[in-house]
Amino acid sequence: MPDPAARTGLDVLAALAAEVAACRRCPRLTAYREAVAARPRPAYRGERYWGRPVPGFGDPAARLLIIGLAPAAHGANRTGRMFTGDSSGDWLFRALHRAGFANQPESRARSDGLTLRGAYVTASCRCAPPENRPSTGELAACRPFLERELALLQRVEVVVVLGRIAFDTYLRVRRAQGWGWPAAAGRGGGAAPARDRGPGTGGRAARPHRRGHRPQPGGTTTRSWRLSPRRWRSERRTSVPNSSGSRLNSTTIPPRNASPG
Image 1 (spheres, rainbow, N blue to C red):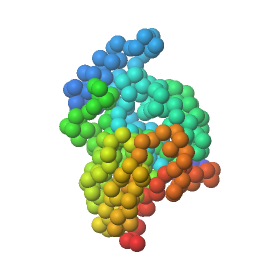
Image 2 (image 1 turned 120 degrees about the vertical axis):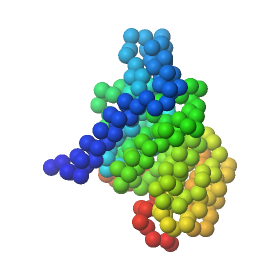
Image 3 (image 1 turned 90 degrees about the horizontal axis):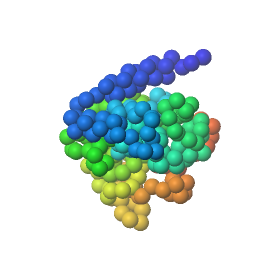
């Protein structure tokens, strides 16, 4: 029988997705995403672009959370689903499929049958921004959507943030939720799985550097690197098993109620 809690979580996330898709808070982003949708690339001529903010999607019982920067102008802004229809999604969903978190290795359209098991994908900014650069105010306007997703995704153990802006956004949200994390310390352009012991423990993040990471007092580790398919496969220091027993290479975040080490 279906899990009633999972069903309720799915319904709440669906309501949040509808709210995200209807958002018009940021005039610059609204104008840009709609202008892109009105002038498709030649390769996509004849397609009807989504042209709206893009909601997160995935399993309400997810233990893996992936946070990107924003929809691509001719990717998710066209298809209406995160990391769908562009090259970044090609290798991401192949990796998720290989690890058992996705039922298929490709993500082409909202109607392609892709489902995630134990994983959820979202972004710091829900609209495609000009030059892929949302403003500080636009990120702040979008942040409540991520806050609400995190409040609903109670089983998350691993977070993979793709890029500096996503890293900063995630840490700001967790600080606002009382987790006591520092401001982001990583340098841009990388993925930064983060590890912490939860609110009230006073943990401090490691300072990422080009050769890996340096542990700091408090049992907290953050790492930053440029993510590639090879790096995704080779990062095996810690991992989380999915329901089929496969393991995704990433760094574990203990539950927020974990006691200090």
